[in-house]
Length: 312
Image (cartoon, rainbow, N blue to C red; front, side, top):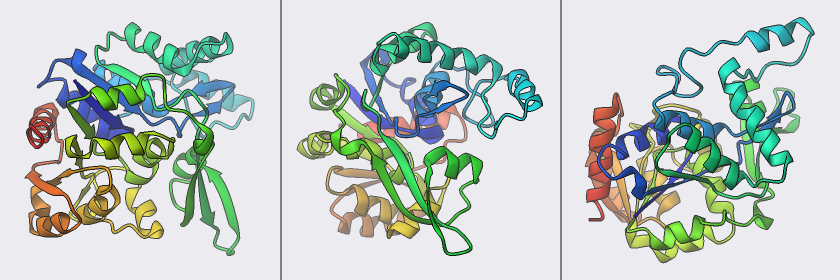
């Protein structure tokens, strides 16, 4: 059995490779939900949907998120009324959010609804939210005037295009949240636990902030292997550098190693960072060097196999 901590496009692409080299039914994916928010009256779970669509082979191939062949007629119609549409939901994607919102309003848990959605898409790996409780990433930024403002994750990342300098990041509600019903069991029963190449601050950070999850990983540390999302001092995709640096985390595979060392025994780094392997080891981790730039599903599959071999 394999458990994987995931959030964002990098994780989804890694998982697409993983299910090519292992039995997909043996995989449980624990997904960040602190990016979840409500838009246009609908409950939206960006990371859950990105993982689901990618594993279903339905994701937008260039963006990595959203659906292939998507249209935005509904958003264009909302624009006519002067509605605030900076967070745009595609016409086909709307069906997922409509269904999720209705089922949550009926009293279903996010775990239950996610199982229903993934089943409808024919996704074999079990995809579970990190928690059924509300956890929300809050990004504190500094405006040009010097004023401090707190934004939701999507306000900072989508509406503001990750431009305002970050002062702090908080996960509201995390301290009182409980892990999803099968999250801790998935970690405890897994032969291998993977930390996907995700943003360490806003994708993996919220999962670790839910009480009990970090502790469970620490207890299995020798079976935990992570993949650095940073190559040659820069993220492959997304704003990791704009979050790590202000929070005192070096934007490098070494910075990732120092952030993960408490709960992760092995780190896979890119061949371009091989010269920094000794620094990763000095952080207390074993190191594996591989090609981590997932240009296609074949490379992603090879990376997944290297990652699994690291703790075989």
